[in-house]
Length: 459
Ligand code: F0G
Picture 1 (cartoon, rainbow, N blue to C red):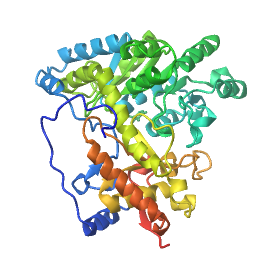
Picture 2 (cartoon, rainbow, N blue to C red):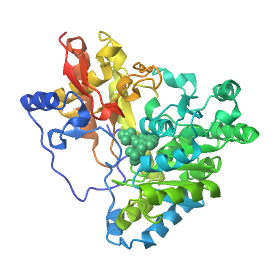
Picture 3 (cartoon, rainbow, N blue to C red):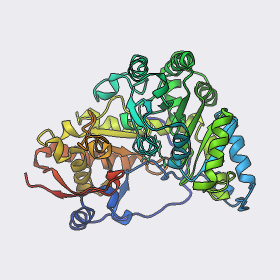
Picture 4 (cartoon, helix red, strand yellow):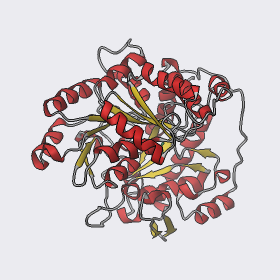
């Protein structure tokens, strides 16, 4: 029986991938220090490390690449990108950057003063760091339901206004740099924010004259969930939903590598002239001129076209349902996953999957390595290793969510790839108590999850 919507595209070009045998898989993951970020791509059969920069572009995007205007200043592709952002997201001003963290750097270093806090609906790794580098601190204001993998709340990305109020009361208004809201919250499992919540947050922040800056990286996928789950939006075009969402903010940072269906790129966008002028001034220091910001002309064209394409309802419907297809196969046989199934990935609950491991034996890191060893499927740890250490005490932080992310690249894999992946995970779940934990033997100072190394413990 067919499951979910059929792919609204056909495949015009393929890339061959090899399957390393069991001996090579064991060697490869050991050589990589049991960190899937350190595996060579050629040792990977199905790559579910990330949905970032891994999309398959359309023929329309590729043809746009040939129209790249590689002038240093004022390339036509910049104006196409500016127009696409104005049309789809409704912001007036844009500053292009090489990718999302370039935009975070410019936006957050402008808005955050030493000693200030940034309340956010759960942290993201690079976002947290770019708040900390100028001397700020990111604090969590997501609803409690988001920390419980079993809770089926339809909008687990929502902001808890009571928590925000408490930060204002405890720290004082002048200590709040701005309010940061992520859409389709990555670390919570790809969970959306509702329009009602965004609207209420805007009213709340208006009372205090607080700025709201979105991380709109996965806003198109969030808009799909609003249409699917929120009363009154059942028939609203995705672009209208997006424009209403963005209308409740003062600006956004955006990693184009996700919902814009491209391999590289990013930007910030705003209606606030001060933010625009300050960040446009800094972009030339760190990224490149304000009409390319680290992207080639051809890349800007691909982003401009991809931003429009990625808001098509039929595409988004297929996209979200493919992720759900993988999640449902696991859920049916009680493999512990984050519920409801999110927008860009299926998240395994590693603490429940490997209950015999201590948190300092890194269950999620262990499970990601074990999945690779079993099937050459590459996934990613999203738990204590990603969270890092407390900036003040130096202690390891253990977030409630200790997850392995099976992230689905857009338009890249078929449903048989999803079935192969599910089979491997189910096989491992059946023999889960034979999987030993890991010991961290190398830890870099920043964003340790990218380069940390581990050794296998014995059971
Ligand atoms: N914000 C969010 C919500 C992200 O998921 C990412 C990247 C960024 C900002 C930074 O953007 O990579 O273009 O510099 N997420 C990737 C991931 C790395 O795998 O989740 P970037």
